[in-house]
Length: 279
Ligand SMILES: CCCCCCCCC/C=C/C(=O)SCCNC(=O)CCNC(=O)[C@H](O)C(C)(C)COP(=O)(O)OP(=O)(O)OC[C@H]1O[C@@H](n2cnc3c(N)ncnc32)[C@H](O)[C@@H]1OP(=O)(O)O
Ligand SMILES: NC(=O)C1=CN([C@@H]2O[C@H](COP(=O)(O)OP(=O)(O)OC[C@H]3O[C@@H](n4cnc5c(N)ncnc54)[C@H](OP(=O)(O)O)[C@@H]3O)[C@@H](O)[C@H]2O)C=CC1
Image (cartoon, rainbow, N blue to C red):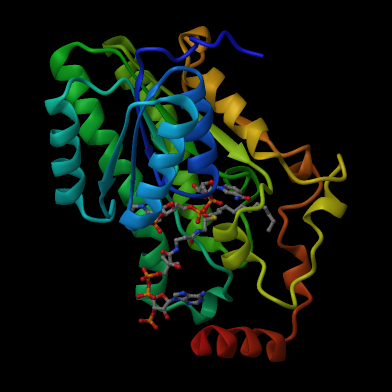
């Protein structure tokens, strides 16, 4: 659906690019000619994905073991990236979430979600943006958000807060940095099953409704998200700035996706907490 060279000569950092949707996007970007830089906490996962990208597309790939909750680690990673030349595109994809009754969240638990999802993405954006502006180099930031930015979402309140704050970042910087050559866009995906999301959001005992409740009767294909992301970061989308594109089959128009959990009993929630403590 795209020219094979759509992303040729683009250096793209995908946070959390070693797994899930980050890996799916990295594959598509590499296929379209990009040089990939992927980061995450698990080196082995990054190395495995990098090897696949090199083998499949002969792509140039760099990996960075970086915990984006650590502002200094993000600054060091960006400095290392820029040593080989400027980045062109940042994809804020890494995030964390889990379901919990909010009245049971400790401050540490809420921070465990806010730290990577909000602060980590903000640190990456500020470090990249500063360098782009200082060197007068054009840049693009794509943030992977959620339809909770529109509906809110019960039982994943810190994630909904973090994603909403990143939407505010996208809109604010689109205006502030647009004149300086930096464009910001976002995607709000609906359900795109990944081991990470399924593990955190769909523990045993939760209904398997996202596909059945979706107006299109199915969940998303990773390739669909990767294609939308490829378009939004490409020069073809150069006049799209400050926008979030929803890609959820229309699901949020019907439900935030959490209503089934309103029917969980305290016994079910207690069992969920016990199961987690055991794991
Ligand atoms: C649906 C259809 C719509 C479809 C649409 C759905 C859209 C959803 C949008 C978002 C989707 C995603 O982000 S999907 C991405 C999901 N992927 C991930 O989450 C992967 C990354 N996850 C992680 O790194 C971890 O699992 C993470 C959650 C951050 C916790 O790890 P940490 O090491 O940072 O934290 P820990 O030290 O273990 O714990 C810190 C505190 O958090 C608490 N804590 C940790 N896990 C907990 C849990 N499951 N429940 C309660 N509390 C928990 C601990 O008890 C600690 O609090 P104290 O006991 O007080 O000390
Ligand atoms: N899948 C879905 O249905 C939906 C997903 N989304 C969003 O899409 C994005 C990808 O989600 P998905 O692929 O499902 O999730 P995964 O759990 O598979 O991926 C999360 C990635 O983020 C990385 N990561 C997590 N914490 C950190 C950290 N502190 N520092 C660096 N990297 C980190 C992980 O690597 P490592 O563990 O090695 O650090 C992992 O590669 C997220 O922003 C999510 O909120 C939004 C709506 C729905």
